[in-house]
Amino acid sequence: MDINNYVDNAKAQLRRGTLEYCVLAAISQREMYASDIIALLKQYDLLVVEGTLYPILSRLKEAGLASYAWSESNEGPPRKYYSITENGRRAAEVLSTTYESLSNSIKQLTQSI
Image 1 (cartoon, rainbow, N blue to C red):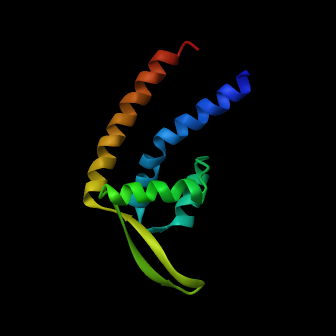
Image 2: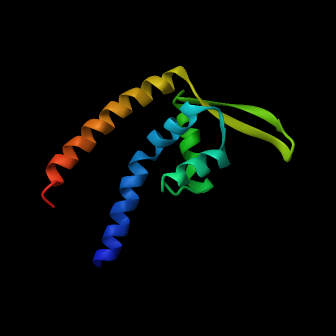
């Protein structure tokens, strides 16, 4: 494997490992439609497509961390809007602490690179 393939794969793995946390963070701000979640994540260079987002949203819902409600739309059929649950808020708080600790550890380990 050449270095570019290795780096691309490693970057994808790092993103994949944090996307569920990022989706929870997004829907903790307000109730959001899937395309709104994608647009918000893209603002932070977290490129996500619907094929990646919907399985994450399904896992979050099945775990009781997210819920959704249908809402009429002026632009077509009803839309599914996602929001965070109370358990989702608690999970996001734990993940935030974990992510911060991990990030600090990695910064310390890699500061000489």
